[in-house]
Length: 127
Image 1 (cartoon, helix red, strand yellow):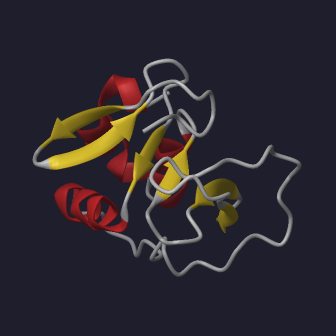
Image 2: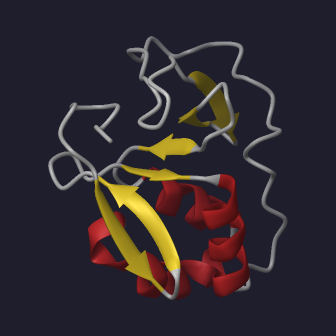
């Protein structure tokens, strides 16, 4: 699979039986729905996380370039997560996060979970 951002080959990174496809070049990563729920469970987050596969598409794409899903090569749709614009596969394969986006989303939602987020995602995924 290739990175939807820079087209480099994605590598699989695993921690606590949760595997994400990661780009060592731009530091973005792709999460499928199962991985998202495993991360939610692993971090025991004290707030509700919207189901990424059911969030309505963003009304404004913020002039970001279109990205293609690393699994099916279809153009992904933009979703708005409390002001964070992420890219979701139209076939529901997963969601692409640019470097630091997921951590920014977590930090915006729960101040006290920052250390757990950094510990789980590691410095690689946290910017």
